Amino acid sequence: MVRASIVYTLLVLGFLSLFIFSKKDPRRHGLGRRLIVRSTLASKANASHHESVAFDPVVARLEWLRENRDWERDHFQELYKSWNETGATHDGQHHAQGHEEQPSHWDGHEGDEDDYLNDEHQFNISHRLELLFPLLDTDPRDNVVSLGELQDWHVQQARKLSKQRTDREFEMRDRNKDGLVSLLDYLPHLSAEALVNASTDHGEPGWWKEHFDMADANGDGFLNHTEFNDFLHPEDSRNPKLHHWLRREQIRESDHDKDGKLSLDEFDHVYDVLRYYGEDLSHLHQGHDVTDRRDKFKELDRNMDGFLTEDELEPIMGKLHPGESFYARQQAEYLVQQADENKDGVLTLHEMLEHPYVFYSTAFTPQDSHEEYQDHDEFR
Image (cartoon, rainbow, N blue to C red; front, side, top):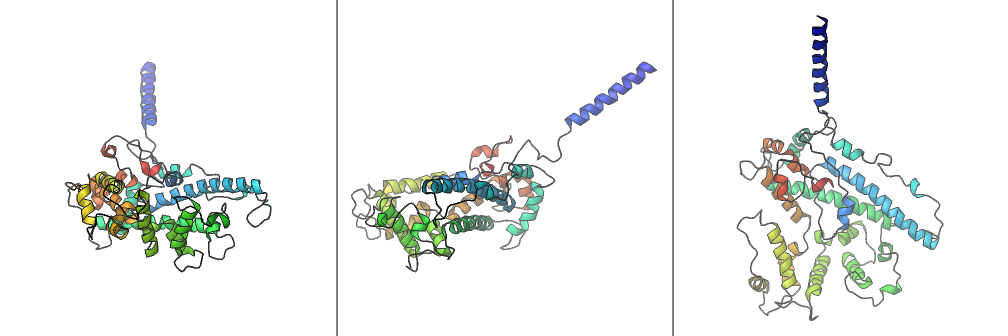
């Protein structure tokens, strides 16, 4: 009896041990996936790569907090380097306040953003999609989410992020808090003398002055908040002067003989950009291909003089300098392609819940369709 009792006890203990150690943490998301809040400041610095906006406003908020913390760190390091060299701030007063006295929202909590996203008690992806679905299904409210509704949603999220960045930059540049920013406020390392007869090559002082003057809609020599936003984001501006400047810059970039227009040979670079976007989206537009270079040139050459002027580039500027609507369309098409099980062109809540991680990834790669876990660009 004693031996049988011992054996029984050992069996019970073994079963309990197996149960305890095999039990998964209920707070963690399934399939071994771990969501990571990306550092959008690093991706923003890469001008050749457009960052995709987060689908979920909660994720977007966490990304903003992390970006703002990183920005504060980088910004104050830059300012302190300048102040140490000059011994004064912009107003001539010695700066006594230390970097540690400029708190960010998440000081002392670095890494909490990632932990929050991966705790199902705090952030449940299925629950989030159920909450977001009625916010997406708006025009009309028909219990499905269309491509247009998804595009509008991503445009809203992108514009919110753009405004936050503009607000932050404007506050930093508007040193006297009069609601206006001058070119020298934006480029404090330059002097007024440096702008006289300065080179207008890309990135040179004269180039910045041209850009600034085009954004200065009322011509008062300063940028208010709206003008400053246009200055930072000319491709999304409604200022016709800025659009004209972008077209002129496009001509200047490829105009090798400096005659102010593009020949067929000089059109090569422009056509390569168009082709790049066409190929990049070929998986979304089956059967669609970019027109032959010569045919495209003839299509744009309205007066048939064998050259393209600034105005004749207008029809393709949306691809040469794409704005948020273009990228929002890309994201929307990707989501529909990945989650639309019956291929009717719209998404039901059921389809979204069946493919939840598609909405928490903006990586435009075929690997995302694999069953195994893949790292997602949205959370880097």
